[in-house]
Image: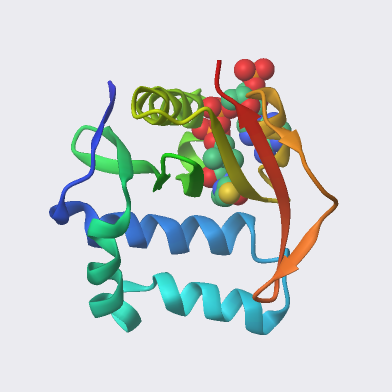
Length: 155
Ligand SMILES: CC(C)(COP(=O)(O)OP(=O)(O)OC[C@H]1O[C@@H](n2cnc3c(N)ncnc32)[C@H](O)[C@@H]1OP(=O)(O)O)[C@@H](O)C(=O)NCCC(=O)NCCS
């Protein structure tokens, strides 16, 4: 049974582990060697735990997907922007990201937001298109990574 819930401080390390493991598997060809390495270092709890901990309260929305107490997906950001969305590879295409994004949008809307932006990975842009997001520009390069800016109006 997959459960979606708010993240707590105890989730900081497993969530970061999930981010780097999933990123290296699915997104590491989407940037320069240096850009990919910097992203990994930034999110690696073994290398950057203090900053990762400091960042935690800054996410206005931070949800996790859990399978029998194991973190298998995360989404976090603010009411107007998705920062990170990751689902463990073993659990892909089972509707888990869709559950996470729907809950994220519901909370954002309840808090007064009418639009959500995301700088999608190239890998995930098909997922966002399926979920009502539209490309706002061409592919952009940021911090050595290729990203696809997208947006969705919340109805
Ligand atoms: C993108 C990601 C979060 C999707 O997670 P997921 O749990 O597999 O997605 P879902 O199962 O909820 O997919 C929902 C729908 O989108 C489709 N979809 C999922 N991933 C897709 C992809 N990469 N490209 C195109 N369509 C995709 C699914 O087929 C499904 O469509 P359906 O309803 O017609 O069956 C996951 O692949 C991931 O973690 N990728 C690596 C990290 C990443 O790129 N994150 C985005 C950072 S902005």
